[in-house]
Structure formats: structure tokens, C-alpha cells
Length: 152
Image (cartoon, rainbow, N blue to C red; front, side):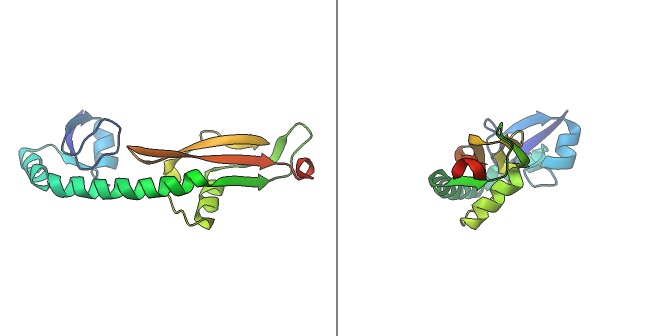
């Protein structure tokens, strides 16, 4: 286990400046290269305490942008017609890429990793997909999948 100092909120319970123990590979391969944390040395801990105010301001900015995006997403509904069998099973599926494309067509640009789809949607019906925009901001997108036969 490696101790690191967190530079931004990205898990529900990790605050900026907190020292946490994580697996070595997680620290080396993800947290430190992406700038989300630094090794917990005395020098780094002091440096982050000095930067904490600006880091918190940056986080609050990101949170307010996430809130604006969440409001836009909550107003949208994704309708899609896809050929389906009689039992409602789709010829194909809806995946995260389809959702990101729909959102970008509606002036909402987010990363695929924010969308918590789980399994691909493979049958007609109504679905709700959770989207985590920030550790403290999440929203959902309603999706309705129709078969061209059922809509006429």
C-alpha cells in the first residue's frame, strides 16, 4: 500500500488534501499520472496545504459546471427507433457511445466514463441511465427505445 495526498475530489469520501492509502499500482498508474494525487511526503503535504484554497475554488467551479450540465441532461429524453423482433429484442443495441452522441447533438459534451450504463440496452422499453458528473453531482437520462413497428 502507498500513501498519497488527494488533489481533487473524485470519490465520495476523499476530500482535497486528505492522506489515503491505496494499492501501489493504483497510485503509480492512475492517481499520480492523472494529477489526482501526489505521494504523501512531508514536502508534498505542506505544498498541498498551501494550495488547498485554490484547489477548493477549482473544485467548486467544476461542481457548478457539473450542476449546469446536470440541469440540461435532466430536461432531455433520448428516443431511438431500432428494428426489433416481435418479442422486443433489438437487432443491435444501445451503448455508451450512442448516449454520448445524443448528448453532444444536444450541446452537452461529457466523457464516456461519466455514464453508468452497466450492460448495453438490448430490448425495447424505457430506461434510466445514471450519469456521475462530479463526486457530489449526478443526474439521469431517460431513454425510450421503440421498434418502428410499435410506433406506427
